[in-house]
Image (tube, rainbow, N blue to C red; front, side, top):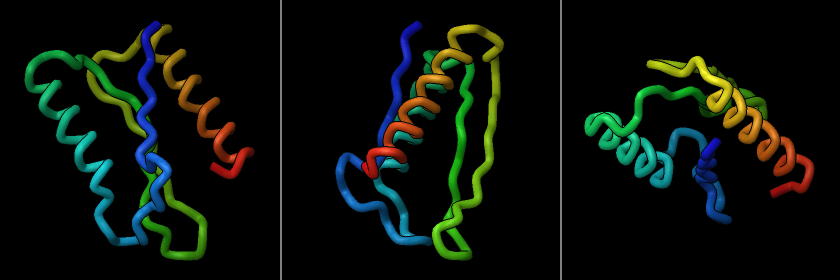
Length: 91
């Protein structure tokens, strides 16, 4: 399994609610370009949205295209592990 986890903060503070995240925009544009070239055949992930109340972030999961594989499930477990690790270390 080859998994790439993209951390969008790069040690920089996240934009305030309602402000564009330039790192996110760049990643999405790169993914769109690769999908148009046929290099990506499926995608799965989670989205977080600006919080209307304090630090509670609304989230939504998604999947599209071909993604029924053990590799995709393993990659998502890797993402889950990294999110939990970052939460516990305050990064």
